[in-house]
Each structure stands twice: as structure tokens, then as C-alpha cells.
Image (cartoon, rainbow, N blue to C red):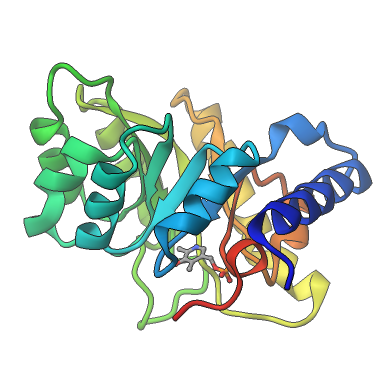
Length: 227
Ligand SMILES: *Cc1c(COP(=O)(O)O)cnc(C)c1O
């Protein structure tokens, strides 16, 4: 059986090659290891292999892991749907939130971010497919939300995130990522700073890297199937 250490090497090589192929500096693509529903030992193994960024989708599970692994120097990203009554623990425990889609949630996180911690890094989740079932803010509403979030002192607006519907074809996979990239460019040109495009998972990381992803969120390819 191939372990996490070997998978980490394989995935890192794949991201590196995709960046080169896309004409990009591989250092501009950061791997976020999605550890939801994965045991602590696998996180420790990934960390021993040099991985520092981990993503969790569920508040309780994430907080328990952060507390148990407090002896390691890890950066924790919240990437699940965030209910506004769960913001306090997220503001207290996590380093990043990728899934902001309401000003109310952003305001609460900002107010609840402890003073002793640096501002919480946030990305706005964009509903690039315009599907009713998906969370995220519609593209047309993103500039206004970005401008409002940039004003919140407990937050540091880092960029945009998306989770498009699964597509098989590479060129089709690129389209929603291109939409996110163009939206980011439009907003930065208006004078709001953002350095992050959080996009791409095990099935579509390559298309995301071709469209300038700076963070790719990989679970299955690193840790195997989830329970
Ligand atoms: C689970 C999840 C991932 C990782 O998905 P894989 O297909 O296992 O790589 C990435 N992003 C989000 C938001 C997720 O919920």
C-alpha cells in the first residue's frame, strides 16, 4: 500500500509539472492538504513529509484536530460551509476561511477574531456555475462583498475560491476557473488587493493551475478515499 509520504511526493511532482507546463513558477502553487474525515496519523505523516497547510470542512472535527495536533506548526484552513452561529470557534482556531459568502458571516468573524492573533485570512466563495444547490456568492455580487470585507479589521481579504461542478473534459474544466481569475483581475484593478485563487481538487487541479490557481485543495490523491 502506498502511504501518505509517497502520495505527497507524487502530488507535489504533479503540481510542479502542471505549473511548468502552464508556464508558471511552481513556487506560486501552494498545496492545501484536505484532511477532512482522515485520521490524525495521516496528518502527522504528511507533516513529517513537509506539508504544513491542512483543510477541514467540519467545525467540530477541525477544532478537535487543531487542539490535538497543537504540538505541530500547522496552518489550518476552514473550507466547509460556515453557519453564522459557528463563527466564533472558527475565528478562534483557524488561520484561513475559504468559504465566505455573506457579509454577516464576515462581520462576525472579524468581531470574534481574538486581538492576540493576526487577522484571519479569508477568501470569498464564488458560485461560478450559478447553480441553485451550491453555496457561494454570484459573480455579479462579488465586487461589492470584496470591498466590504476589505474594510473589516479582523480579516485580511486574500482572494476568491470556487468549487465548480465536476466536468470530465480539460477545456470544460478550465472555464469556471477562468471566470474566477477574470473576476479576481477585475477586482484587483479596482484597487482591492487579493493574492489568492483557491481552486482545483484531485479531479481538476491541472485545469485550475492552468488558470492561475495559487492554492489547490487536494484530499483523495494524498490521503486516499475518505471514510
Ligand atoms: C473535500 C474537498 C476538497 C478535496 O477534494 P478531493 O477530491 O478529495 O481532492 C477540496 N475542496 C473542498 C471545498 C472540499 O470540500
